[in-house]
Picture 1 (cartoon, rainbow, N blue to C red):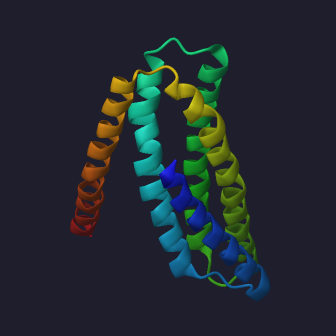
Picture 2 (tube, rainbow, N blue to C red):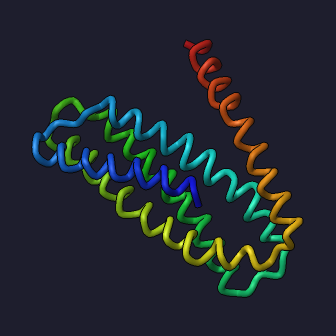
Length: 170
């Protein structure tokens, strides 16, 4: 849940960018690039990665109540929606050359993301995480936290290995 607080801070910055785009009719491409990198790397690969690759897999091995299983499936679909919306933001950002239509498209995608993430975070914080903990022993929860830390430690290497591979292709 601590990771959600950092994601919320990025969402607040994105909301400021929406206001700026609305007021000026201009997109700050550097901000969009940074926001996309943050969402793809931190929110999706690191945060959602831990949920999908550790928590949800562990939950799938338990006999979850029907409503908890349904919630987990919803969260997985929401992660996919977030990835798709970010991809659409990238496309809109790449199309931006000061044209009104592209500016509006960037603004729409930012609004979608800033509308999506707070609801998604609330669902995880207030419902799923609390409910899912009940299926695990203290030992299992401790192992999961250890797995989360190990997952985190590998992410920086994964990110920058991909950067180097990308640059080498160029």
